[in-house]
Length: 413
Image 1 (spheres, rainbow, N blue to C red):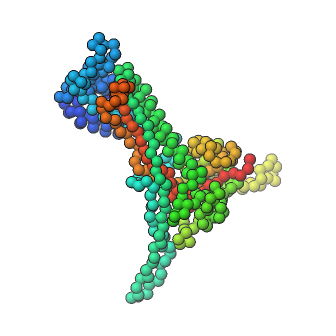
Image 2: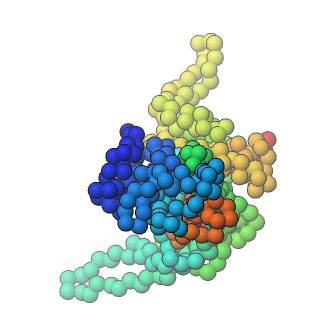
């Protein structure tokens, strides 16, 4: 639960503990969600935290200097008395960051929360691996040496990362007229659109529109129809079928068809079945209720229903024993319509099943980072921008192993 800001107490604490300790305390409270960005007032915050160089609070005079109606023409207090607005800028920066992150981490961003983030310092990475040993265990006779096994080279190359960002300005008007909600609204939009952009790239990756799976130096389509043809007409992954047509999600048999594809997937190094927990399902909004009915049904009816005693119906427990989790993505549906050549009806019936955490990853150079512009910048004089904050992130969506995902779709109206 958040609490209201007591600016008199904040001012007293600043005088007793110093600006740095007070700023750290507020930052920790925001991180712990004991405080919310909406609890703050930019004007009152400035009045409580702006000081002279010797630490004397002068925020009220500093804010008053922003009034263009002053008879003295608005003498710049900063030039005459040496105003230090560092604490105000630091706290405002933390408020901006918190507001951006709240919008960036929305639950509506299905894949941003479902697909793991891997931190990397490289602009495109070659992820090394070791080919699986397989079942090489042999009987070792008494006193005989253990057999040695070889390790095959295995690696995946991820795409180049890209940087994206926006700037949030805090103007004199925003402080003087206390337009805190306007600033926070801008922050939320920055976070939301950075999140939307990332989610779009993840949607394009999951749908197969973006094919960047590069395994052992060769680029393949993410989805293969029959082990010889890529979903988008590109190179298919050898001996892999992870796309199934005419498989609308209607009942348990459609799920079983996908499960059988996973059963037939073999490790390319050993020829052994892949150990996978394909328990995540992503459907379009039009199918979310049907999906919940399929996966959560307690009984299945077999036979023919009728009004006569001749009708024969057999009831059995739902044969789907895996605890599936169903997600829906409206953005994925819109991206499929915008990027993939398909009909509306077919797009509504497309669905994906697998272990998304092993199939995909977001390669991140740096997460959402908020950087404060230097004080007394040219923008302050030309545009009355007291502080401005740049939010940026850099990363790329990557296919790690398409053997952990299956795409099911409809081929006709």
